[in-house]
Length: 262
Image (cartoon, rainbow, N blue to C red; front, side, top):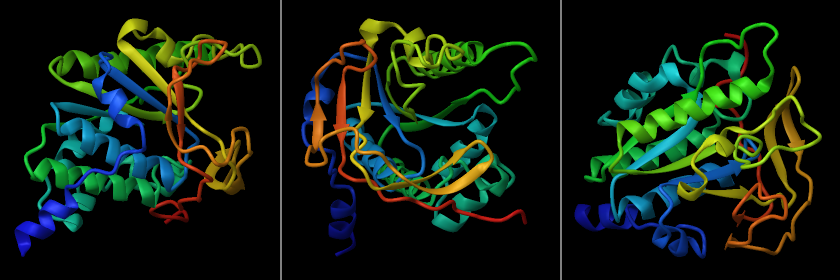
């Protein structure tokens, strides 16, 4: 009975069409999200499940690079409580850093991935958000280059593995955006083009928990894409920013793990 329950829990449910991504040659798969939804982390966990069935996998997360040791301890923890304790003292559990990346949905996804690791999958986390502050007078473009360097470090450390990345939709672009000149070339654009595939999560309405300036909370999401689309659609955008779309339907806001200043 226990063995049956474990088998069911390890069954993968990636988005429709993701099998084509698994068969593609690119080493790095970047998923551009709007922070603070239930759907993006859940999809990440199921895509990780499917990829880890066929080979080693590194999961890139937009968390401080100083969290590498804590994430390794989390991933190897024997239970949920011990796993959460491994993250104490990090930005992930600090309410002052609640911008949608440390959501309840993200913790749930990380625990799902931890179960895959416990079952024998070759999976590691790689945090790639540079923790050092940007020097005065330097634009966001330098931060994007620094982030790309941190992503590359994860590939370099485990060359036998593919890398699946969840990051903000700006960082996931392969080309710049004229309305954000200070961003320059986004992080993904600095990675080898032939070895990198970028999918933008469709904006199909709903809600998300994220921040605009100093104001954080639940915001309504715009309807930029057809709300009825579902799954992976591999069609390059006209500006070359993405290689396709990942349609998960209207989003639902996922609240931070901890709120308040205490």
